[in-house]
Length: 515
Image 1 (spheres, rainbow, N blue to C red):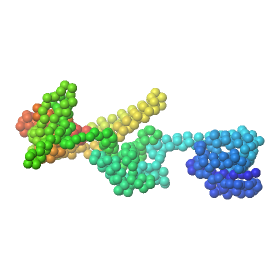
Image 2 (image 1 turned 90 degrees about the vertical axis):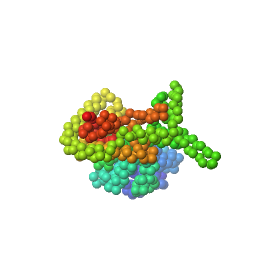
Image 3 (image 1 turned 135 degrees about the horizontal axis):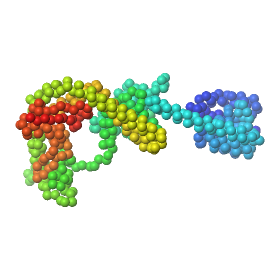
Image 4 (image 1 turned 180 degrees about the horizontal axis):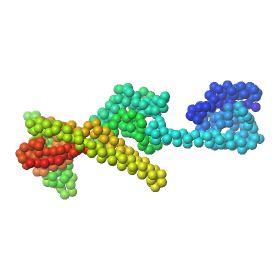
């Protein structure tokens, strides 16, 4: 009788305690010599037997069915199969004597043996794999709930084999943070960020530039601000964040904005999108006209007009760009803050800086109460989910939103505790902007004018009868109102900044009292 020798070593964790391939071959060769078995060929496979499709095993079984061998020598019966399909094939071939003998290190199997015993052994091997898979998954979920990401560390981190945790990569973490800051400015593409990472020593698995899809995954990964997703659920991690939540949110806004398809625009476009028609409410577009003189000179003129897309029609005429520019300079004049008044503001801001430090405590207490309220909502949400009153998808979505809000509040509290006068720098920037309007008003740069107009008026500018008008943002309208009522703008007419709001130029909140 001729035999095939089969040795298998799984690469999976469950087979770490099984003899290595070399040890199996050595033991089985000695067993064959002892029992006088003729080994015609040895088959070695390094693949788990829990799934179908092992190429070496399939080839060996085909050759056995063709009659090249009548027996198998293996270390244990579970080396041949750990799933019911392969196990059933072994049993069937043994029952119809296609396989006449299977020899392991501790027993022999023959066609006349009780098939129940072999079925039990194959069943135990299969159940071991299933239990191990369930137990492993349960252990990984428990690890995730404890705040440890059960997987490979993302770029900028590394797996610490000694502590079984994820720690910062000191060099690459700085590159990742710089990549977030660069993309948050809104001037870079995903390809640019990939090139930036490549130039700073970060490569793909095969040493190439990181693909744009992978760059997007990095920029959208909550792991970098302290949370992580596992099996669709957001967890609060114990690892050290590389960025704060505010920077992460800024990057997400840029990703969302750049993810939308861009429409083609024609030149010139400097003031397109800034104005709307005062008669029909449609947008204002621009056209270029060239005038060729007989002496060879060419004059280029830019005209702005209503798109006239309204069904009611529109009778508004064209207006030259030069006329618009003069009109823009005119409507900027009421918002210019003289340098002397700007210095007075700075003195008043310094005084309010001391007062603001005492007002922060109540805001922090309110934010902490909001954080505690979110924690209570999370507990109630968990109770509802355990009671099976909501679906898992709904539970995960609501939990993710609540955790994201709590993180934002916690970071806001940290910023307020670090600096109780968070309004001060934006206020200074606001004063500086108003002071610089004197230069922008007279400066020929069109982008500078457009930027100033967008900050002051937003999308409220209208063009009617070749004249521009608009309603300014309250943050800036106070300047024009003060001039209108008293002819001057004194800092003692104003304000006390409200503490507890995000300090951006477009969201400052003031309480104005005019003389």
